[in-house]
Every structure is written in structure tokens, then in C-alpha cells.
Image: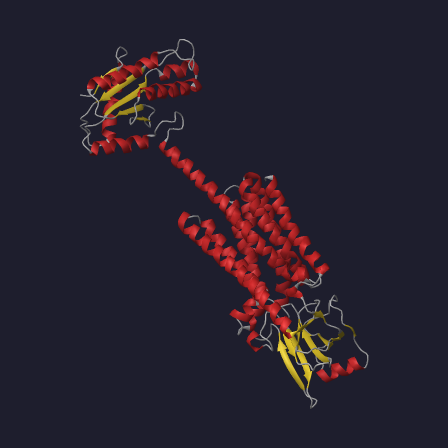
Length: 557
């Protein structure tokens, strides 16, 4: 991994690990803003109290001061009541909790006749029926100028969690919401662009890894749509069950897609053990997704978080092993998966009750995903360029003899067939063989023989003129295609020069060792149906020469 890439990865990780907590320590970010709420919290272990009973208990001194860093003991049966004293405002206040996964939040407002008006929000009801259709639970509370307001709130959830309630002036709340929607829209637009590019590259290059990448990036985008609450507000606002389950199922789908993407990448250059581990990883994720239909939702939820926390590093380690073999590509993928894991792990720890809710746990996954996609695309770009370079080299090798650098048999046949289709009146064909090749190999070995063949190719190449073609036949012979309709005398002169150059001394070969070059020639007009027939006829002629040591040149009659 190059030094500048290491520094880039380090900067990305620091952005997620340090930047968000530091920003939280300095000042509340705009998207997390508003004033912290103040009031009293009281746990209803059975979850059966009415609003009047809860208020009476608080008035009797029960409960404790509300603290946004406390993990309140939510469970299947328990509910927690809050009484918030809102500051006086000249505009309506908005009471919000920046967590789209709350099961049920109810705000009780006392009317003049003593009855209660109840405002509802949370995953247990459709977003279309929320008191305020928003990314997360929020309630508009009427206030009177100069008069503080008191609000009673009941929250039901599946597991202990912190609840950082915020109080906004309504105009400020809507302004912050517009900023958040702008960022989400920009991010989703970028995701769709990347998916489109991956689909196009898959179609253009027939590289199925791009199709896998398109599905993976799309799953990342859908995961963020669900986790931020945008899906509930805009897409599935009338489906509360899916709104609740999507925040777990879609991240699991994304994790499985990450495992399959990793498998497709590392399978080219990794052992069977890595491939088997990644297949097991993907199957375990699919089993967890299927378990949501038959296992208690809360049990599956915890296992899903453990799955991400314990199994996702497998993808990173597998990519690191791949990067050892292909560092130019692999470290980009390591950086992409590493940044996403670092950003998302805080949300997982929050779900498991290990971290309090904060901007880091709320937006870390989004920041990590936003950084991951460009790194992923960079890795795909370098991998595609590497594959294109390899394909170009393979195509070049298909047209060039790897030992001598001359044109390959394929090029020879193409050009000769083309000339024969035109009547064969403009070209002479000289087939050349190193007659003493076996003797050189027996006396000096294969390395010297290869040197001799390279020298033979050079001898023929020096005779060739501009527009001529020097190629190597698949059986090891050389073929010179002389253009410009040479006569028999001109072809014979070229053959004699080739033979003489082979007999001349060269420092490339052992002392006193020369090449016995045999030439079989055919001059225009070439009277054959195809190139292979002509080359076979010349081969028979050159084998006759090899059987008669006294001659080195014969013409095909």
C-alpha cells in the first residue's frame, strides 16, 4: 500500500472516530440541535398506568430528574413516563427524539376541560398516522407567549435505551429538517449514480463483480433510507410492520451483500478456507433474515447486532489477505469496509445498550457509508484498469510471438488469407527453418536453442523491408511475407541473404556455432485456396531440404 493511500485511509478513519465526537463536545450539530429537555422520569413496570395516575405519582414526588444519558429500563411490559417543562416561546414548540426506531411515543396535552389530547408516533403505528410526519418522533406543542408549558410523555420500547429529548422553536425545527433532507437527497442521488455506473460497467465489460457491487451499494443506500427514517416518511409510510423490521432486515441484507462482494473479489486470489468462511458468513446472515418470521423480534434484533459486530470484521480481514496479493486494488476495499465498520459500530453498540445515544451513534453509520462508497468505486476502478491491462496484454500476446517478438501464427494466417482472396499476385512467401536446431539443443541445451531462434528471427527481420511481415509459425518455423509483387530473382536474393546471415558468426551463440537456415519459397501468383494449404505445401518442401544437407533453398513450383 502506497504511503499516500495509507495517509488517506488514516484520515478517513479519523474523520469517523474523532471528528464526530469532537464536534459533539464543542457544540450540538444543527441536525442534532434544539434545547435539551428538562423534567421528571418515572418507570411504569407493568405499563398499565393512565396519564392521570402517572401525573399524580410525579406530583407525589415519585420519579427522578430526567437525564438524557440514563438507560431507561424498557422491556416488553415496562413503559417510562416523562413530564417536561417547556420554556416559554413566541412560536409553537416542537418536542422531538432523534431516534427513528422508538416503538411508541405518546404525548398527552391537558385541555381546558380537563381531558387529555393524545399525539402518537413511533414504529408501532404507520408514519402516515403520526402526529407530525417526520423522520423520527416529533410533536408540535402549542405554547402561549411568556407562559411555560408542561407536557406529559409516555414511551414504550423493546430494550433499554437513552432518550435525548430536544425542544425546538417550530421554525428552527423545520429549517434543520430541510438541511437534513437536502443531505439525504444528495447522498441517495450519489448512491443511485454509483448504482447506474456499476450497471453500465457490468453491461460494457461483462464483469459480474460490478453487478454485485451495484446490489451492494443499493443495499447500503436502502439501509440508510431505513435507519434515518426517510423510508418511513416517504416510501412505506402506511406499513408500520415493515417500517419497524426494515431497520434490522435491510442492514442484514447489506451485510450479506458485503460478504458476497468480498467473496467475489477474493475468490480469484484466495484459498478455499477464505471462500468457505465467507459462504458460511452469507448463509448465517440469510438465516437471521429468515428468522424474523418465526423468532421473537427482540431476540432476532440482538442476534443481528451481534452478527454485525462479530462477523463483519471477517470481510475486512479477508480483504486484507487479498491486499497482500494485490495491494493496488485490495487496500482500497480494506479502507472502504474499515470506514463503514468504524462508523456503524457505534450504532450497534447503542442498540446493545453499551453506548448512549449521541450524534456519533445516530449519524456515524451514515458518515461511514458516505465515505465507503467513493473508496469502493476507487477500488473497482483500479481493478477494472488492471483487468483491461491484462486483457490488452493477452490480446497483444495473441498477435505476437512471446519468444522472438515477431508476429504470431494468427497474424500470419490473417494476412496471407487476405492476400490469397485478392488473387495472390502481390506477395511472395518464404518459409524458414533452423535446420540444425536439434543439434544445437543436444549439444548446448534449451537456453542456447532459444537464443538461436531469437537470432534467426533477427536475421530474417533485417532482410524484411517496410510493408513486409515477419511471423513465426505455430510449429516454430519462420515465415517472411514479401510485398510489392517480388519476382523469383528478388525472392531468391532475399532467401540467400537470410541464409548468409544465419551462417555469419555472432556473439549470441557459442564459438564456431552458426545457424543452418533452410528456405522454401513461393512467388506470385500464389495458387492456393487458403493460407494453411500454402503453408503445408511449403512445409513439405522444407522437410525435403532438411533431408538433403547440400541444399538450403527451393521454390514451390
